[in-house]
Image (cartoon, rainbow, N blue to C red):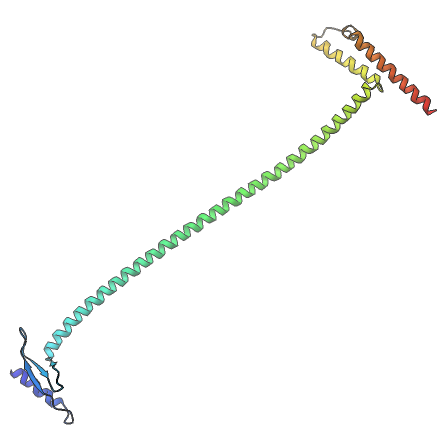
Amino acid sequence: MAKNQTLVMELENLLPSTETTLLFQNISIDDMDTLICDISTGKTRLLIPYDRKQDIFEKLHNISHLANKRACEKYEAALRALNEEQQQKSARYLEAAQNAKESAHAATQRAACASSEVAQLRIELERMTQAYKKEQTKCAATVNKLTEVMSGKNPDTLELMWLASFQQQEQEAGGRTVSPFSLGSNSARNKVANLKGLGQVMTHTMHIASI
């Protein structure tokens, strides 16, 4: 009680003379010292002693500090999770970019190989085309030659061809000497003779016509 009276006196001394006089009332609270309340405004306003204020402040500070600590921990955990997520996204992006780069490089190499193969095929096709044209010319010349021979215009060539065929038959007979007239039929010999005679007649006729 002496402590409370001292506090009341200190409060009264601190108030200026122009201030409204405070009305104090003692309130008993279980498990606590008696507190003084201001009832001048019609509402109860606790006047807490300094030592009690210090205890309350420390408790509030501890509670606030713990809440702040937990909030900081949550913030740091959320920041770490965000950083990990960003790192994972960056890693996936870099991996996808690397895969795309490798795929593009492989596609470029395949395209280059394909272009080289196409160029080689074009060269080969051109070479084959030229060879085909050359063989076509040879075949046309051969056909013209055969047509000329078979028409009787060049019986000497026909006779040479006939002799060449008999030489081939001689080689197939084991090198035994074979007369072309013994192997050839009378009809074949007659046909050659007729063609040769026809050629001579045509040559003579053309010579007369040119005179």
